[in-house]
Image (tube, rainbow, N blue to C red; front, side):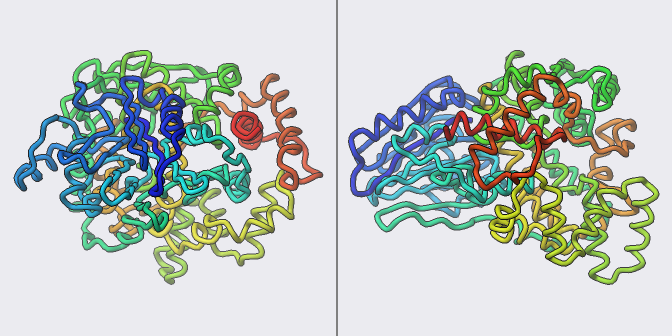
Length: 606
């Protein structure tokens, strides 16, 4: 895990841009405190901040140069199957002088060109400069685990792992992207396609690659989850479960490759507890392997009872942090600055605290359960998408059975809301969305609702599998962006085994009835991996997510006062966005977002 940056101008870089790339690196020192590197030849400048994970020697220094000196590469992330790729490339005649995955990645690119991307199992963002052709190649991983942003000024293309680095560019506009603001306020989403909160900064979209040369910047997708939707041939539940089990064990095994200490995030939910069980039962995790949990003693969202029960089966070291509203308030400025953009709920502060705790205990690599809900249909509202698809296909018998199970399991609220919303005509949908966004001015709403890719595409899905695919396209990346920032704020590398592309592609290809049946979500995961957790967790009917005592926190006097001030700041700083008749938000989520938005504006777009 690292921070990368650069500047590229095929007609020649201004002399001051090499120093500017060095400033990019200093702005991201937290991403790579172990080393730094810089290359410049008058056309391209590349910068790198290193967090040493694989091969801790100086052999891993970047920018990394090809044997003939023609290509220079900077790389952020990990190629988990680098050992296998190295063996394959060695058989094709390549010689290696280091043990790094960086050298393997560059060799793969030089041998296979951009097609190497499909061979990579990893999380990555990288840039390769070709000094002979005066071209720059940029790429991101399939799921968007690793970030890559860019900005253009005059004829120079700048790029970096974080927005805050690009804000070092003198004179770069700080104008707020109105569509990104709309999606944040109305849909609780950020990181949609290439948008950021700043008009002047874009992202290379996940699963995309780009080439810059004298003719400009060209971007295209090299991976799309829609290509795998319903394309599988397996229909037998037992065989599908066995395949999922082995794919997940393989994913976890690859992500344990590290030359520095490894630990895990652990809640009382299915995803992280299964991961913990796999580490102990299949991958020989040692006694005392560290697991990190956010705890809220005495509050209904506290899950430490489940963690304790799991600990009676597996001998991990249970290490806990205790986030509070007062801590979140005191850390607000640092937290917002770390995340680059406003966050959508207090749970991301709890994640920030878990990352801090892991670093305090000497861990550098942290495995996390992110992605299980998207592959296995974990959210309760997936029932609604499932029901809608059954109704559209006139599968009335199955529809009736599923609806009965949903209602009798008391999961009906979010499911029925989702079903109804999907079935409603467009004008009614819009009216309900605006009513659910009381802070948003009607004129602002009407100007941006049809432009929203979330509205146009996410809510156009016609069934469960399409909704799962839409989650990979529109929901997951903002969670991954916040995980990246929260971990890197403490110089930690977060890894997500559930997002191994082999597992994701396999699950997308499976029939819907293997994922939800008789009112039960995550059915495939439970069949495949349920034996790696405990009955108390496997049988849970509540779905908390990574919850915090949000209502309690935001009702505290300090937060109430800040919410009132932030509301007035947002009204003043974002003219035409807030309804003139709106009052300071009372709900925890809206209050949090208001405080986040005001703090972000003060830090990044004053």
